[in-house]
Image (cartoon, rainbow, N blue to C red):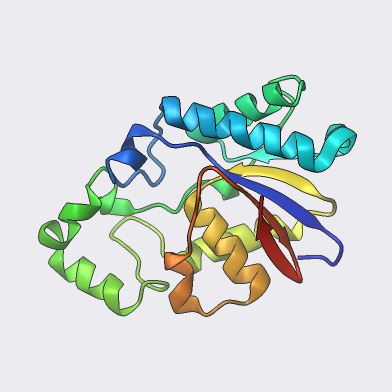
Length: 196
């Protein structure tokens, strides 16, 4: 990440699958009412944080529906045109392969070998047909190389973890367990971060 750049990163609002602890990965799911309220809250927080400067910043989102809906609610809160943002496939959630659509509470019994392998190496483990956090970090880092100015980003919990791990040089084993709130904005710079 280049010196002097700030990312204003918003995780998409809650979906029913989040609430049910169901593994979404790259499956498209809509926000629920709580998620819509979280997106509106984050739009208001961005407005207070950035003021008139908000109109000068680029906005980019994961192309998945839950992120685009979050972005459009945020932009409405900012009195900006809903559609005035870009998308980038590299900001999609980590692909959980054959675990997608499963419930976190059931994966240990459905795939005991995979569950055990993930417990041993949560950063490097890759599900059948999916990605590891190492894979995700590589694609997110490639996206970040093209960022040359402060940017508002709406993406996913896994992307938030990968960005923080990469930018702040965190211990790989800790990255998959980082907190990913849906009702706060991550303000990320090369020299640190804060939640707003």
